[in-house]
Length: 235
Image (tube, rainbow, N blue to C red; front, top):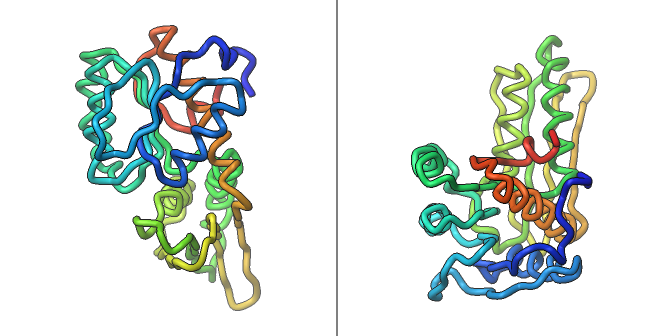
């Protein structure tokens, strides 16, 4: 963890908007690391942005929640997926109001590592003949978006690495699977597979706490803007 992160004891109380699996796990992880949670609310309950916000609700609500924080001058970290096509709409209010927003489709450091490895692997695989590629993602039956935001991010990293051929995503919803993402290249002779499997939500939650502390520090230093996991790992 970056040494310039503030200690949890120096951080403001956290408001958690969204009482689902991710929001609840982040609230617990925040408290385990010494922080306090001032408010935990369902997305349809009244709430006010105070000091620092973690947002994990639904695609149709996320943009308004994030914008509300920007307008209130409160830094916000969001883990909601399915609304990121609207990120561009935040640029003007972020610049005008000096806001700080951190977004991610997945807060797991291991998933970020998978994305970076996929970027490099695609550079190599795109030079080889005879391979096709696909992504498979598996989640619990209650996950709302399909394909997952994590799978879409993995696809984007792969394409950014130079893979220009088709890259389909196969989405499976079963049981209580926390999350599995696999990127595979197949040929008549062999397969190359990169895979991340989450064993619990603890990795997501602790990664989100890291993002929250990092975002608070950026905001405190007046380094306003729109950030994501790539920025976090460059520090």
